[in-house]
Amino acid sequence: MTKIIDGKAISAQIKEELKEKVAKLKTEGIEVTLAVIQVGCDPASSVYVRNKKRACEEIGIRSLAFELEEDTTERELLNLVEELNGRDDVNGILVQLPLPGHIEEEKVLNAIHPSKDVDGFHPQNVGALCIGKAGFVSCTPAGIIQLLKRSGVEIAGKECVVVGRSNIVGKPMALLLLRENATVTVAHSRTIDLREVTKRADILVVAVGKPKMITAEYVKDGAVVIDVGIHRNENNKLCGDVDYDDVAQKCSAITPVPGGVGPMTIAMLMNNCVESVSLQRRQ
Ligand code: NDP
Image 1: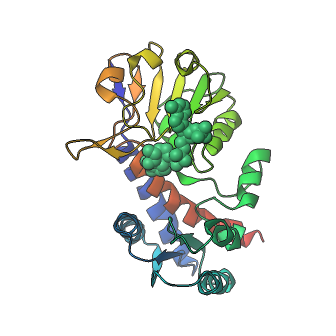
Image 2: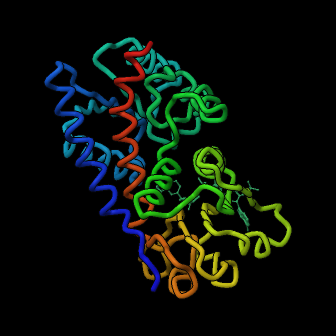
């Protein structure tokens, strides 16, 4: 029978563990603090920011909200990031994306001090992941490794195929699987015969951004399928990059949408906030 990998339950377990760590840090006089910056009021971003604040509350992390006007200049935003970099009472800094068009995202993300970059987007953290050094890892792929491990899926020695090569999902995912000793292939829009490639996978991670693109014919019998995609279908219901009903019959385990990868992303953000305390202690 196909196992449904329950991201909701696993993320709740991680949050419980983090709650204990945060409480212990409090007894040592450390209040873990995340600064969340939002520029403008894009409705989707507001939902993400609200969920992050709620997760902080649940775990006991202090969150500071900086809600800036849409017409905030790049300089003003950079000044705020610099101020937060210098504050000893702020452990993590998160700038909610997308930023308005007049602000260069890369410049802002690179301005966050690597030891406070809880999203794991700073080139120094990406480089650290690449060469196996300590640093923050992008939350979604880090969450997928936790999903696999906590569901008892062996990674070492497995054929893993990642569909998608974005900087925030596909590429760090491939590096993490490599770190776990898998044999990794990364597929993308220029891959010739995607189906032949994905059918080699014991573990297939799909981060393609195309609703229900991966059907059973892309999947090997008994594979583990991780669906990163998140979309609204024609009936306004959430669906992933994987055609769940079709693929679930063929694979050994699968993540649902919603309730699979999504909840793990926030749990790993919270984990990075807690980790930031020890990273900053080492500096
Ligand atoms: P991007 O759009 O940045 O990247 C998509 C990748 O898929 C690209 O590398 C692209 O290739 C590749 N691709 C596109 N079309 C095809 C195709 N026909 N065949 C093979 N490869 C293709 O997306 P993200 O990585 O940011 O996100 C992917 C999905 O995951 C989205 O649905 C997003 O909403 C979701 N997501 C969910 C999160 C969660 O917490 N659950 C977090 C982050 C993202 P190329 O590089 O050649 O263009």
